[in-house]
Amino acid sequence: MSSTNRGGKRAPSDNYPTPFWCVARLLEVVAPEGAVWMDPCAGTGSIIQAVKMLRPEIVWHSCEIRPECLEPLQNIDARPVIGDFLVPGMRFAGIHTIIMNPPYRLAQQFIEKSLQVAPHVFVLLRLNYLGSSKRNTFMRNHCPDIYVLPNRPAFRQDGQTDSIEYGWFEFRRLSKQMPVKTEGRFRVLPLTPKEERRF
Image (tube, rainbow, N blue to C red; front, side, top):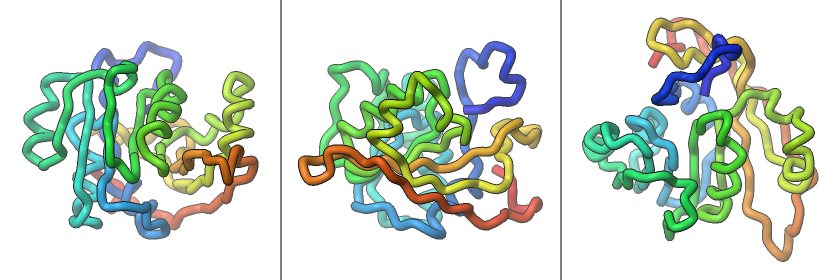
């Protein structure tokens, strides 16, 4: 997602690849569970490729709505499914961790569906995602852990940084033992030198 020029319409492809360094900062401080991960809005696989460089043992599954992304995802062994992850009939099994950068306007739907698929869900989001009356009940009952990126990401190849701060939100599937999660941790990730903030 991107909030650059947020007053205008989004690009039809809704394609904003996640820079490597954003993923690297997260994985330096957390070790998501399980050996089978998924990106349900994978694009051409920028998050998957970043994780592979740091955690090569992970087995991947991916989903992407755009057919032109099939070959790039096959090339990185991401076991792609071309289709709409949000469609009720789209089912996945055996996934331990989901990590994604979803379209902002659909982020809530992606989070809710992802929690049905995997017990741990990491989502790259604008920090102001926290301040919505529409999402208030969900966020109070599923309070995420937040890992703040102190540098603003650039989601475009021209290197233009975004207009707002971002962080990784970690959601956990609720259970009978934890019917709600009303508190979350807050951590600021290390700075990334300018020369490293590239795709």
